[in-house]
Amino acid sequence: MQLKLPVFPGAAFELRQLLTSDDASIDQISKVISKDQAIAGHVMKLANSAFYSGVNGNISTIRDAILRLGSNQIFNLVICSCQHTYYKTQNTTLARYLQILWQHALCMSLGSQWLVNRLGYHRLGEDAFLAGLLHDIGKLLIIKVIETNFDDNDLDINDRFILQTIDELHTEYGYKLLDSWSIPSVYCDICLNHHNQDLDTGDILLLAVSLSNQVCKKIGLSTSQNDLVDDLTELPESQFLAVDEVILSTLETVMLDVVQSEYSMLNELQLDNSTPYGIYL
Image 1 (cartoon, rainbow, N blue to C red):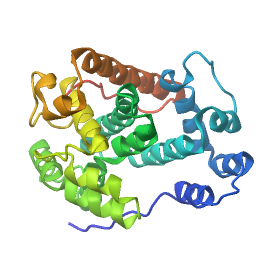
Image 2 (cartoon, helix red, strand yellow):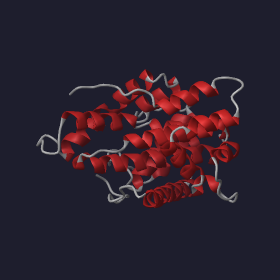
Image 3 (cartoon, helix red, strand yellow):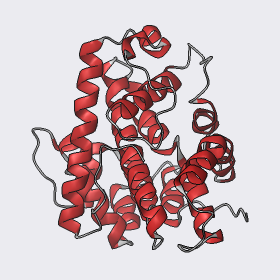
Image 4 (cartoon, one colour):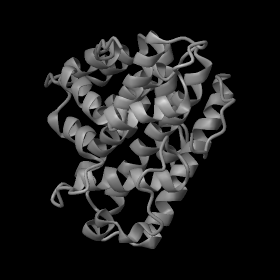
C-alpha cells in the first residue's frame, strides 16, 4: 500500500498560528473561522449542542461562541470540524467504518473532557477533548489509505482484512501522523499508548482516555470488541482514578447523548446518516 501522510488542516493551522501570538483578538479569531463556512457552521452546531449550551441558551455568532467557550476550546472545535470532513468516502464498503469512527471520535472527545472535569481535573479539560478526538486517528488514516489503494470491486476488501489492519497498525501510524503535524507529544503518546496494558498511573489524561475508550466499547460505539470488560469498575484505570459505577453510568449517558445529538445534527445538515449507531462492525 502507498502511505502518504495528510497535512495538518489549513484552517486549524492558521488558527493555531494566530493563537500563539500574545495579541490575538476575538475578532481576528472569528474572522479566521468564518473564512470556511462549512467549518464555521459545524463549530456553531457543536457550540450549541446540549454538551455546551447548558442553561445559557443558544448562541448565534462565532464571536459569541469564543466568548462562551474560550479561544482554546474553539480551537479544539475547529480541529473537530476539520476532522469531520475526513470521515467521508464514496466507497460503500468503507463508509460504515468511517461513520462509526467519527461517532467514536466525537464521543471520546466530549466524554474524556467530561470525565476529567467530573473528577476535578479541570485544567485538563481542553487537553482531554483533543486527546479523545485524536487518539484513534491512525484508524482514519489506514481507512483512507485502503480507500486510495482499493476499489469497491476488489475482493481483498472485507471486514476481516479491514479490522485486522486497523487493529494492528493504528497506534503506530496514528503516532506518526500526529508527529508529522507537530502535534504536542502528549497527544502523540496517548495515540501510541492508549491500548497498553501497563499504563502510566501518573498520567491522568492517558488514564481518562483509556477508560473512556472502554465505555465506548461497552455501549457498542467501537470498531472492535477486543479486551471488552464486563465490570468497568475493575479496570486499573477506574481504580487509579477512583471512578465508581455512578460516574461510569453517567459517562455512558453523556456519550449516548452525544451520539443522539450528532444524529440530529446530521438530519439538520441533510448529511448521510443511513448507518445506525450503537453497533459493532
